[in-house]
Image (cartoon, rainbow, N blue to C red; front, side, top):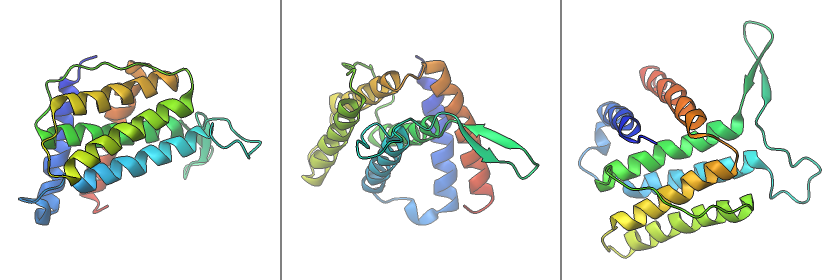
Length: 181
């Protein structure tokens, strides 16, 4: 797993966003990025659907057919797309904190709901440290990143799939900046 390229790509996207939104320069952008990560992780869990015990439809949205404006359908893996949206914010948070040379570790759960909860717990730990104006250590960030990588494994994604989806979504995010998203 080579994170250098992902951090580099995220740094370019973050700079582009800063250039398009100069009001963000010179301010603390960590809080809204952490909130965005929480929201995106919730959206990822929603596409997983495994916690929806009240529903007869608990299948992850991994092969979703969307109508194409050219006719026919485009097949999308909505679960992977939401997972990669989270990855964008995790990388951006690492850049904001100055933690890009990191070691990844984690302990995977077989139970996907528990792994999602572990991720939320790690984000909450980061948020708690920030809200008390304490210094965030690299270990806190590495725990978050490692737990998130383990979530990807629990969801059945390979690192190659994750990287490819990140590259594709990064390109879309650049196009969105061009179009005033």
